[in-house]
Length: 368
Image (tube, rainbow, N blue to C red; front, side, top):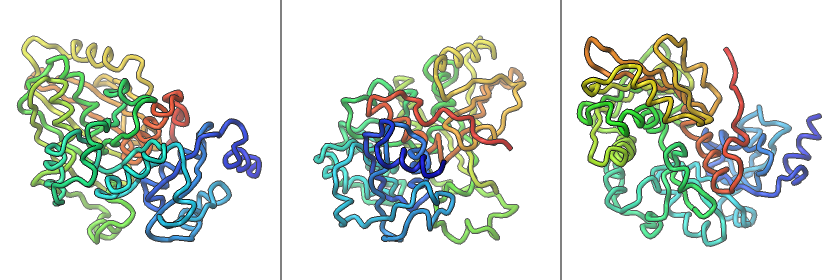
């Protein structure tokens, strides 16, 4: 059975005629998209590229892939890394995607970049983001910014299509906050001032090579807030909410790490517009996400937790109004490594390649 699966997955049998390259294959983002592509019926992995562990089979780094993906990691200069493909995923830190994009696009590939390199459509907007990241404000490929599309499909589906070439995959916190607040902001259900995003993430959000504060002895039984001076995902959140509101929108954002492996829980607050009831808000949210495959709206009685989205591309929203204080409260749950990263990337890939949007993503996850 396993051999049959491998033949299907890597020989093009069964309709796998489209080819993907993963740059940054050895990190959590790289292995995450590899896992998803292995069960995708139309796209096969043609090449894995990395800086570290060159020549090592990815299944040596991640033994759960043994027998499913034993491909070695290639260096960027290797011949196989230059072969043309249909889609390129750059699961890389800021600055890498912008240096590779022009070359990959010139070879006819479409590209999805995980970093902030292409989440903004102007050099000025990128410079604000780069400043928060402590990077130089200049962009290596400013000519491509105007054509890049922000990769939150629920808001930008019409632009993520077969005519597009370049997608800036959204940040994990940004996905949870934007989806959680978009209907309220778009429909004027809350004041545009005083919005609060109180966000908690699992340790995997720090990546495969975190600093000493993220190793087990430091993280066990410990929680802390970080980047209180300004988190980079705020730029995306304010940009997207501002577009929906038709004016500048500012949010107070607090990122916190909690001692779990994966998952984000964002509790979002805003001052409810006078005369708006909880039922009005629930109706607006259900209308906004009606027909969406990956967003589900719940009321305050729902028993929903981060475990229910683990390993899935889903976003679960619990929507309530505290009538005593006049506050909207939305609790947004996603898996930071799937809907917050590789799952959104695959969803975007499907749209770019004119495939069904849910292909390779329509699974219930695991419980407990």
